[in-house]
Image (tube, rainbow, N blue to C red; front, side, top):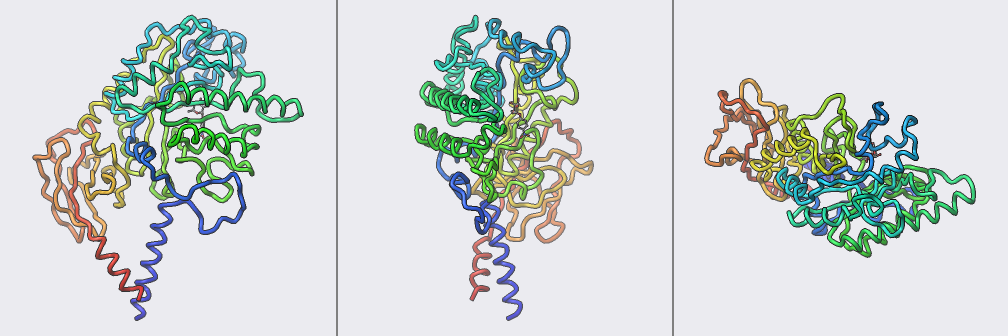
Length: 480
Ligand code: JFZ
């Protein structure tokens, strides 16, 4: 009897833990909020399911900052190139006049889209307007746009069309910070500031509505520059803005970086619940374990060099290799998140060779192994040192992505107690099966060909069968 009670208690605990893994909602909200989270758990609609299944995205930071490329008057700016306007050595008037030189004669959006497709990207995010305020579409609400540049034409429209033609979803990056707009403020100290910022918020709303009307096929917005007091102290506005946009465009996906609650808490409201459709705070860092993401949808964005988003002529420090980026993509997928790699095209519309090379190498890997990434998610297995497990969502197919082949070539596979291994084969070559060597209950070695020198992560497909029904039965019994 005592044993039975303990079994019931531990089963209940397990159930509770599993429940917690699916939602961030604490047992009880202690702070009453009007502008906090409006949903418990992840979105379950088809638009969100699609976003969740794509896994690999391409980020593009493109704007006037690509012209100086991190250098001004022969001096190098050590910060992120897209922030050069804030550098004391760069006169702001000089920066603001760069639009007179924006003329990307080699911009071919079809080539961009083809190259993203070949990399294996399922979606892309383009900077429509970064902190400098320069708009890559001919906005009717400001003169500071492509229309005033020698290029004259819309950049965004042809890009959306070209990517959509390749089956790639488009998301629009939009910065709330706008260094060019006379009414933009970081904090509101006087009634005049408040009046200006009220006008600015109307401007923001108009621009976003304009983008939605001009580019109706976009799947969402990627907001940025929302950390100033002026913005985060008006949680009502960002809440209403989000609802307004999703009403004009049902299904629109918006991350957690847009909003603050009425107490100024960002990303997570004052009760610890995620605001927006996914956690958008993973920036140049990734979660280390499944517990870190609290069951929320999430996306990580990554630069190839250390911290350069826009084009920077002189990359310094460690430049990530294709294998490092692939491993980050695999890790993200294994933790149920999306991974977005950033590119900063040059001002003429071409990509630097380092970026082209990485797109091609990642693409070669994705071509063979993409099926382990798209539709992949957390497997629920204990992580092993050789790499990552990925589950094909809602199936018993598990991929082992081997990033570090041990010298012995022997991979330890430890299955959860309810799982049985039925077959192991190479994803690249399903005809070749691996014979598991049993080393314990639910524990095996898989032996890779010791002669083979793997240049990129190798993927093994495990067919498993799960006896969860038995577990449920046990729990039912214990409860009585
Ligand atoms: C912002 C921008 O300032 C930057 O230029 C770039 O566009 C990037 C994608 O977003 O930078 C951030 C924003 C948030 C964090 C770090 C850098 N963060 O939450 O750690």
